[in-house]
Amino acid sequence: MGERIVEARDVRHAYVPGRPDLRGVSLDVAPGELVAIVGENGSGKTTLARHLNALIPLQAGELLVAGLDAADPDVLWELRRACGMVFQNPENQFVSSVVGEDVAFGPLNFGMSEKDARAAASAALGAVGLAGFERRDVHALSGGQQQRVALAGVLASGPRVIVLDEATSMIDPQGRDDLVRAVLRARAERGATVIWITHDMELAARADRVFVMRAGEVAAAGAPEDVLVDEGLLASAGLEPPMAARAWHELVRLGAASGPAPVTVEGLVSSLCA
Amino acid sequence: MRGVPGYVWTDSPLHRLPAAAKLVGLVVCAALVVLASSPLELLAAAAGVAALVAVSRVGWRAAARAAWGLRWFLLMVLALNALLFSDVDPLFSLGPAHLTSSGLAQGVRIVVRTLLVVVLGTLLTATTRPQELVAGVRRLLRPLGRLGLPIEAAALAVGVTVQFVPTLLRESRQLMRAQEIRCGNVATRGIMRRAVSYIRLLVPMFVSAVRRADELSVAMEARGYRLSSPRGSAGGGERRKRS
Image (tube, each protein chain N blue to C red):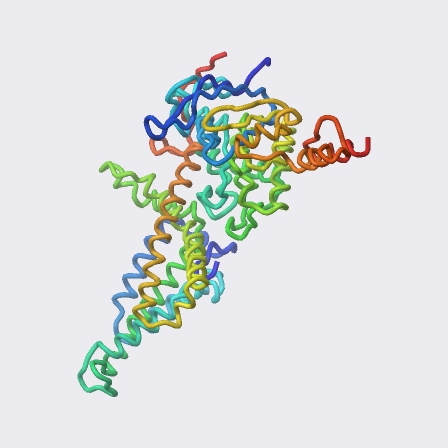
């Protein structure tokens, strides 16, 4: 791998001494890459995500995000600007009930003038498909719209890396699709690197690479077509393959198909029609 | 959100007034309302509040929404005062309860004062955006900053509290509904069992509020919030880049 925007080397962490939550995680992410980190509850996904934003101090190992050392307290705020984070529950992320003011919260914290912060907030809302929502009440929006406001709040600070920590788990399918579209658009237009922490295997199947977390370790990493079709590996991590791969495995068992399993519905259709 | 009117987007002299001035005005007006005791004084206070509602252009319904949410509580206050305030010259007696004209007058006084203060508070939040409110509190508390008090934290706490109220109210309604589904309608029970049912809600409400506050503090940190540095100013140390 050439240039890296995230480099983790043997990152270890324990909330309670003697009970490690991260047992030496190492991973690299290239600029502009879309990476999914999957794993069951308690596998260390969120702990790892919070290290990327320096929300959890590094206990052991080495972690560089956008060239900034997560162990260096002097670059803490720069690191947080470089690596924005969207959390699971949109309602628990808002500091203001007015959309525009909430989105401008981050830019103001990172030193933008009020005028620039307002402009950045409007641009970010446009980028997530919520142009003109500046004066809306966040509590009057749907869950999907709220999560896109949270994403806009991150985009407004101009991060190079966007971490989404189970950001689709509390919203409906339509809201999920809208959020995915907004993230992919931000990635395409801003060249942002996206790290998606998720249980959603259909979402993971759309990533460039997938990391499977198991008991605080990276159990496997690679392209979705290689990782998300391994039933044994996924079962050991408390997961199951995406729907397309499961359907393909059933067809193979019935003797109706052969060859590598697809991981997306589009892949399944083209494999069946081939 | 029922019972918690938010900001009303319109233009009025009250909207244009600085938040700090409105906060001071609220304290002064609330003090005047509380001090009003004769019917004439209460009438004058009510007329003053009505004039403020008219000037604010937020609409009578929006201004009265929070007060309407308190109707059962206020009715109870009125009844308790009317029946228990005095036992001199009762109009009607039932055991220890005596309905008296002085008790009735006291109940009306308290209810009217409460209603007017609630409407004043509603006017503040309906004409002041949360961030303006935060800025207003910050400005008013600034002199105390010289004594080492955490002004920034206090100001933000006000803003976050205002925006968290609808969420917590909705959650309390959900918890009440969940309790009704499992244990039946608490409203149909005796007053003691009803009180116990409500007390049982306090624990999950408290746990939920603490969890939400924790998640919010993490999200705020992730978005660059820090107590040690004023917002809107460049911060952070010198960039240390490593290959």
